[in-house]
Length: 231
Image (cartoon, rainbow, N blue to C red; front, side):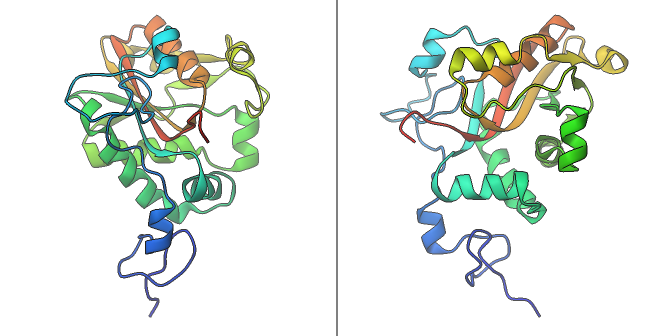
């Protein structure tokens, strides 16, 4: 009764949850050679050896490896914003599918998948944590354990949008902790942190530090979209 439509523009397509040719062309996927810490694309070809971007060579990232599905611009940015702020929950299936494929190189047996938390005030306003929806779908597809309430935001931090890198890290200092009722689940585990957008890495760093301090063995990160410097 309802023919398939492009998830970005609404034009007719051949399969459900797909993109039309134009939107596919305008959706920048993070493929090829990427930074092994944050997933941003790098020049050159992938020969199987880990390579790192300038930021990840300069900053002490508390996590082990990282990937992103998309570059945060053009059609990808519009879809992320529609999913995050526009109640486009129908986008969960394709977005999580792209994340799952991007995560394949960093997935490991026994990983515990954990979303970046929202403060309760922001959760009440938005009605859902987009990162928790994504992490649940990724965990289910990969056959991994999911802990949606393992991390907590202890204070309502201002939006990171528009802040410089150092201000982003300062904004999140001490703002994330491990839920005391879930701390035992972390002991000796490899945690996969999931968020919708990675810009400076400050949010992932705060969450990774909290996990490691509570007994996690190591942490990897997965973002739906990565902000690149040329965007």
